[in-house]
Image 1 (cartoon, rainbow, N blue to C red):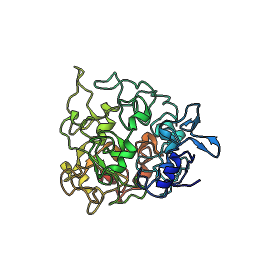
Image 2: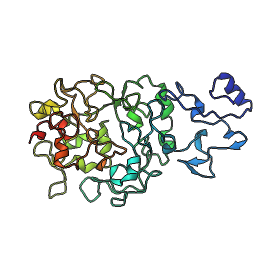
Image 3: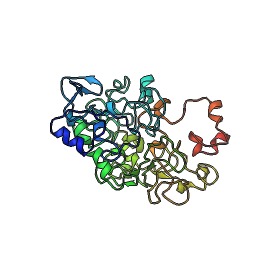
Image 4: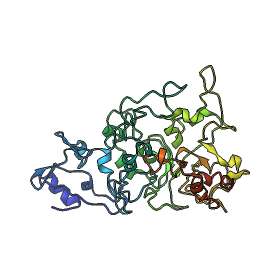
Length: 374
């Protein structure tokens, strides 16, 4: 009965007519705007005389889904085949049809070293367990093992309020709030969940409306970064995407030297770890100034963060703050076809790596533009 909620149908529902509409969205999903309520919610948990919506990420339970949801859990809603018109970002695309900006958890099923081992998709890492690499508690400033396996949201998760014990509570209000904020297609200032980049609470950035389904030099996410001059500047309070990563992978951003067990600043050559939240404008007179080639076009395959001052950038290295190295410059946060969720094959032999010689469009050579000539 009916496939779209309008005022008359909502009135009929209130008067006792049971309906559930399952509609495959054909436009960008913005809750309460382009997408009908029935895409996600069921009024009476009944369709064709039977009950429905008793599952958690596809696993049947005896507990009805919270919030009148047709599907319960992040994974259940965000599993499918990315086609460019699905209207929902599928971060678990088992068909591997199209990986979005954050990558694809499906690659983790091929090799656990290819992404984050999120509960409901994969078991905990067989080698690392629940201790994040670069975050071992034994190292100065490192974090101890998570209290349970990594999840999408809430405690032991990345999205939503990470102090909330349930994933529902962690993202509560986020989806609907996205539709209400006037900055949805503009800058996310991190002020609340709806105004945080990809519902990563406190993180700033500019969101591509199709999650980089069809990314180009001028159509892409714009990540937020800072040009830090001390190691402690890239923590989770700054609103940078790297700062969020540092919540778990803290020692990847610091120098764990010093016999006294403290961190010493190491924000220059010789680097002992790859710099993040570092502006290549500082070294534009070196090989890094040739990022992207002539005119320095933005490379979606090797993204750079910025201070967001000039919106989505199609060219970089035009002024300070527009070419900031970040964790996601090299990694896809959900998973990729390559080891360590890298955007390219770091393990490739010399011949394969040098196949990129001269184009500098991907891999390490996008920034290290002269190293392919060695």
